[in-house]
Image (tube, rainbow, N blue to C red; front, side, top):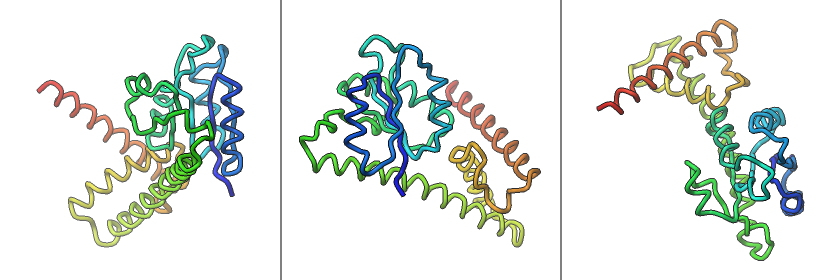
Length: 216
């Protein structure tokens, strides 16, 4: 079964090039960004498409029809799924780096020209590895939460373990904002509500601590 990835660009030529380059290894959702596109609508479409990764062009404004660049799409996705596999391709790496927090997701668009097959194969492997690592992180977090919850219910937890469980709850909420595949111990509606309340309260506390640290 192939991984499903989206590619966003304002140029039909680049969209076709990307599709032809990666269609053997991946199922490709091709999205043309134009003057009718909005970040909100694009994110909604992406989130509803059961994707394993998202690749976007950086300079979507290049042809003058779009009022935002790919980094804004990346930021919007990260607000919802901070750990989701994202890649940004560009012919303007210096500019992209200046406007992107995570510079490690930026790759040269020259990789699509087909002149360096070894580099292209490495890039494809990186995409697959990013996706598999993402799902492994979800699985490992899920397993560890189940382990700690079971231990807490039977023997109780030490303070460091309670702290670890708190961090894992927050991480799991970031990895699974839709609440899918919750640990078996937490699938009851009351448990999920309590978990959501707990995560929200913990995030609020962390934000307050950040504000206090900035004032120092």
